[in-house]
Length: 285
Image (cartoon, rainbow, N blue to C red):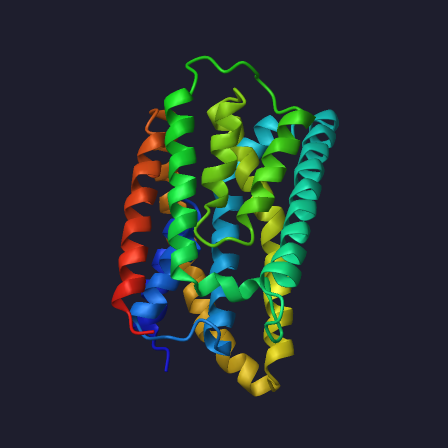
């Protein structure tokens, strides 16, 4: 039975890691396994949905002033910003759906009710994804330019960022923010604009992810109104904790990004990959 102390721990992990380029999913799944919780249960699914909602609100609160200054000051800016978001999100959807079909129909062929979500608790795959994004972050940090070549995000940049983001979605451990910001740094974009753009994409994707997860929950379990409310209450508590932790994490991320310490998140991802792999071999199968 999930208790409020466990909710607090998971919310703090989700809130902090969701908005840092270190993959919240990898950390939350590892914590759940250490707590001997079942990530596929209705309680854990509902809790994760609510935790993502909390971090989405943290992103909106933290970046609102920057978005108003850089993207909402005029109708032309709003239009340009919306176009870049649509381009990136469309590219993300194309890549994700393509990978989903490839994984479910080819790599998981023969498995009953195969879903790409079945990979989410595979610790070896999570460790590999963490290692890959760690290498990308380190490479981007070393190649980071003192003076960016571009002052604004252009459609070609949005396409590349969207394509890379699409690769992140089905693979837990492959940090979305770590991959998208690193891609932008390699394209010669300014750090502040990259950070704002990356998390604006997260605000667009989060409701879609919440809707998909809620649909899977309803489809997999017959929940009455009473049981749904029972699951919602701890989720609301977790959402508040993840919101607060998310705000703190965003301030930390901004300071490290501006100070040129981006590559250190990559070193952490490599260490985390080793830790997740060790956990895989330590836990009974």
